[in-house]
Amino acid sequence: MLEKHWQGGGRTRSQRKWLRRFRLNFGFRLGRARAQAVMPLEEMRAKASAFWRWMNHVRADSSAPLLLLNMDETSVALKPTAHVGTVGRVVANQAPKAIAAASLAEMRARFTLMCTICADTQVQPLLPQILLSNGRTLGKKPKVDKLRGNLLVWNQKSAWACHATLRKYISLLGSRLSEAAPGREYVLLLDCAPSHLHTSIRRQAKLSHIRLVYLPSGLTRSLQPADTDLFARLKSRLSELYCLQQSRSVDGVIQPDKWLEILSSALCSVLPA
Image (cartoon, rainbow, N blue to C red; front, side, top):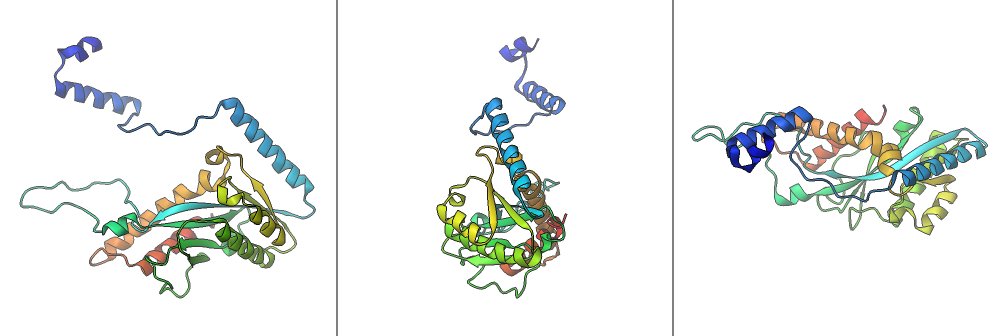
């Protein structure tokens, strides 16, 4: 029946309705398959086993209570996308099309957020969270005096994180940890991004008394805590708070200093848990 249907027995509208029912029944949607490198299962198992063996060695080799940390970078948008909801259609002589007003520069504006998490809820509120900006969107000096959630804004030529930025971050993290968790051994999990593998990074970590452990390449989406448990929740909360603040604004415009406060509120909401 299906073969005859597709050979011309069915009308175009009937075909569309059948495909819609098929997608609803079996949980499919229209879209493109994402292209990414496929790693054989045996290789994934070998890499994951090697990583956990190394972590067991680090734990057994520590002479003091261990503090496990993870830092990763993620891109955050100046204009976060709203959640899926009910949007009015354009009807002649009635309400205009529902849009979020933004310039092309604002829609393209992105920042790098360097998030740090740890396994100790007492230490977590004291860890630095770094926002990298190129200084043009937020200005050379943010108008907000003190941001919550230990959020710091670093202005540099580009909003990308490089090995110089990471050296500065590790130095700051070492000083914060010496105050927040003295007498412990610090282990920082990093992925295999090129900026993380620079030789100067290991030297700086040694000076700051931080032991580096690298996650296996190709498995960060499965093994890195920031990827598995943090970023999706953080960006969802950021979008939720942004839309809430936008609905309270008279003109719907969120200034950069207010956006910083929204980001710090999202960090305060998600990170302590």
